[in-house]
Length: 141
Image 1 (cartoon, rainbow, N blue to C red):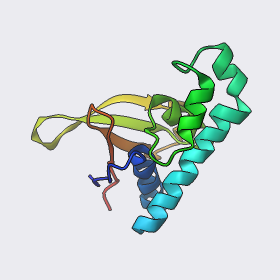
Image 2: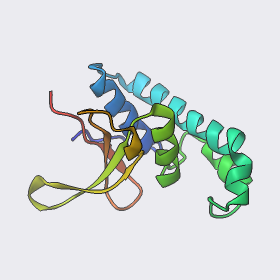
Image 3: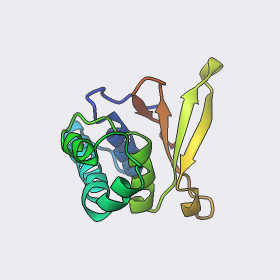
């Protein structure tokens, strides 16, 4: 378990940490923030540019799509289900979300992009605390 700073970009930081760990890289605070912002803006491009009309037409975003897209530009934007779904597609990797249980155990509650599972490849794993915060569940070395 890698605790992630609660600065609003925690989901994106947790995903960035996972990607780096899977590639055998360590991230400095600076590069974790940079990678997190890149992931957020990549999701923003898909949601707010490439597929904006789809999201507007199908009402896949609660409230105004324009307001949502404006909020997504902020580094303190809280990513959630929609962003995990989009990032699993962009990264071509599944993203599994876990909740903590007793005795240090974790329970998978949902997986986005399970169609991207390849062989024994591990998904990106994030731990949700139930109130808008994500930490990184990194693979054991």
